[in-house]
Image 1 (cartoon, rainbow, N blue to C red):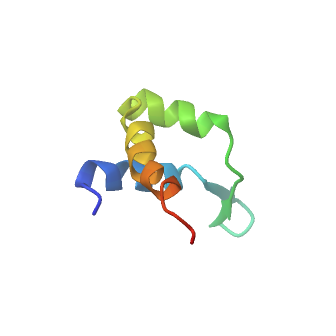
Image 2 (cartoon, helix red, strand yellow):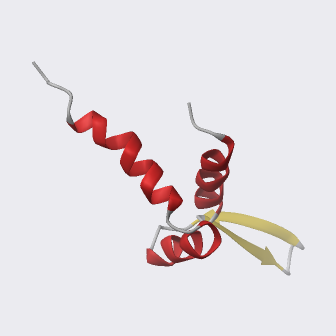
Length: 69
């Protein structure tokens, strides 16, 4: 299970992909999804430090040790 801080970091990472655009003609917001880029990683690193990357590395690395046989 992920702890609360890790969940918060992952949620923040996903929210960085939301690209809201206000349409003045219709007075409505249109939500788009933008492709990830390196600015996401810089924003996360500025807010949380490198804890997210350490957590992901610790979570994923045992998966590489699994034997596929």
